[in-house]
Length: 92
Length: 384
Image (cartoon, rainbow over all chains, first blue to last red; front, side):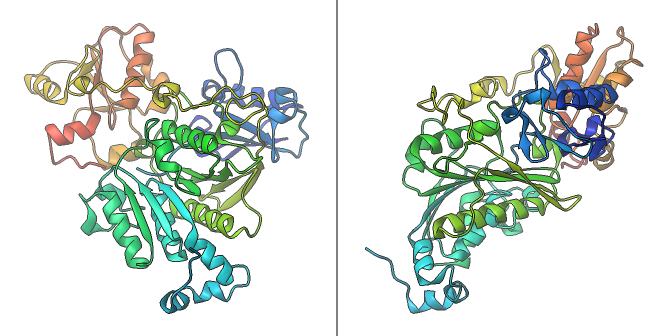
């Protein structure tokens, strides 16, 4: 099953797991499986129109899905999907 | 005038000078370089110290903050003796102690749309060591508009990100993230915590990239986003492209000057007169204490995390961490009066909103949270 890497800010919505295996043939399907397992995650990565939020990027291996087929990007069983939200800390 | 190295400088930089990739030529490039460091906190600490040591000739520092005890767990450029001093002065003292050949320019201000272009224009490279979304977009936009390279790093809890933006032909911050998260959705380090050594790693990556860029050696971190996970000790690299549709650096640019970044990030304009006023959805800690002393009946909830509760708590509260709040809210009675607090009032505000959306009528947010309680009501409650 494709492995989804969960960044620190979103781990609170997936029982603190660093990665979650989720079934699916496309990025959209894998994320749908993931968010059905962990509904609290959904509103943190998708907006009300069901589109990925613009401060959340999703990568299949090291490629940004915005430059592939977005949600329809195919994934293989061995692929890893990484969710990378914007973080801003550093000075204070 | 071409810079030269004195006998003292030659000795100081000898381990650089014997590296063929640096040598006299590279060391003179470092000496001639002008770098602007925005923020002298977590990232700025290792950045300032290593860039000073490396022999960068001129470093501009931008900060408006003063050193606080809670900074010392990670901001190693400041010491206990510096608490209460301006970070600018404390950082400059440390850097000049490391390297007295350095010229430091101090900008005792918050970077803003009004001053950013003026401050940045005199420098060759900009290093972003700030801590909030409006300033990060401001730094990015100003750098792209001025054609400056922006060495980026950011941190949260155990994770860091670093890359180089604004390199000719390379992506900018808006290519990576077109928009910031709405306020409150991503917690700050003050709310979410940060591992003290984490900014060391990310700041040193930024310093390394800056030195490489000046030397013109190696493969710069352009078009690649470096992710670091301290807990699992893993570095991962993701591809980063210039977005042809980027409104700032894309093919059809629509942003040609600096904008209002507070507004862009959805942050309401600061209204100083509201600082000391309490609106009808809030309760002041002193008024709250008076109601407790009077024996008023209400449900008093703390929505912080268990580990925060263990650091400090207010007697009589029931702990319901925000993450599980919707689940626990089912136990609450909409007819009861409910008062909610957290550390500073942000998370409890969200919990209050959630209850109001679910039909609760009598809900109050404790203004300023447990920090205000410690400051104004009970100093024996530790601040963190």
